[in-house]
Image 1 (cartoon, helix red, strand yellow):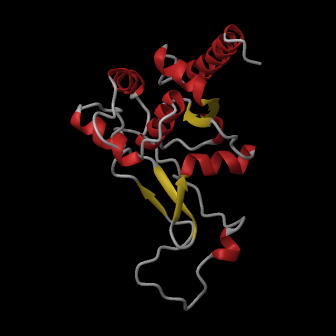
Image 2 (cartoon, one colour):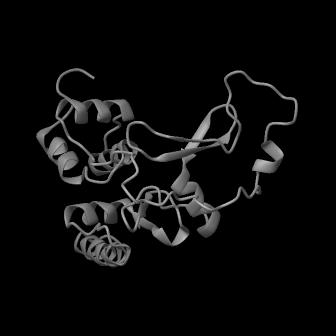
Amino acid sequence: MRGRIWTDEMIEFVKENAKGIGNQEMTDLINAEFGTEFTLSQVKSMKHHRKISSGLTGRFKKGQRAWNKGKSYQPGGRSVETRFKKGRVSLNQRPIGSERICSKDGYIYVKTEDPSTWELKHRVVYEEHFGRIPEGHAVIFADGDIYNLEPDNLVLVKRSELLIMNRDGLIKDDADLTKTGAVVARLKDQVNRCERGAE
């Protein structure tokens, strides 16, 4: 694209909604809001040049409990049939079920398919317990801890509701307050749709 691709309105939108939102989610949000087709690298570059931070470090806080502490590995689902077989050797390919932490936003990713399909762990956990995530929806952490992958800490919201939650400061460190904020955002979103004449 030639010329200036980021308008002042877009930049302000990213600044207002950056807190607690990873780069991929921000890319999805801004494309949904403005009907654009920005790539993840374009959004990361813009945030870097304008020193816009999500506040996510990917580091454990002092006293923070690891999400899998005390849990044993429980094979199941497709992992059994697609797991590397005994004796199979690969120099550079990690097996299905492997996990990694993104150095940019701190989210946990899990490998779900060969050769290199990685998905956000919290979305995988959500779908294992509650079913498929509908298009246009996001899964957020009720207590703000991106390493707390307990099912009751994962909250499904529409992306339009997530915008309202960010704008109105409805995402808290307290799980109950965030869940209440999600209900408030849902009502506000419905009111907005009614006012626009949407069904």
